[in-house]
Length: 286
Image (cartoon, rainbow, N blue to C red):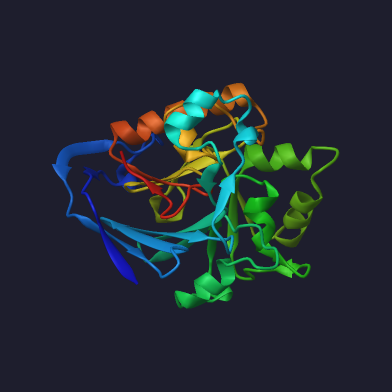
């Protein structure tokens, strides 16, 4: 693997000392030890150590991809030209691995279709599917839970799967277009752990309300890392102009509010964002 040097960021207080169930915030302007980004040969696996948290971004799609600009509505040609996105916005379909406090946590599981790189990538990291004990789900769109199921069986047979109560209830109450969500709920029925926003999950991970993309869309804070799920489908556009929504956002007004909220939260608290549709290396640090 090649190594790329990444600047340092502010230190963060431990979530376990947070008795008010509030999101963790930066407690010091002191800089941490500089971190190294480790990238494999095709940039499909990128790892970053942030103090006590190791984050590994795993691209599920085999080939690099661009999202069509039309996905984001009427983007003026002048703006697209200025951002260099006229021919599409670099993106991905990815999952995230968190290693903290001796625990290994898989955040989302990709699409799970033929050609999916998640399981081979985990194997290359020395992690077998049966060794995954914790899965945290940002939301229940199929490209985030498809990889939980293979051939009608659990892909991660020993995992407890954590999902927001709001998100699960919303999908199971729908009358159509939720067959995959129902299959997931049936297969993992005994292993689903429902949480409320701002609970403290294993490894002191805090799930926070980022609804809009879906009714219970969740971002997870683990130390200095913020797993942002689908806050952005087109980073090159939406970081500078968060008012633009992808057509996948179920409630565009609320999606914009959540995007602005957590981009600012990450900036204000020196957090590194890692997302499921970001291009390689999968991280944003302002």
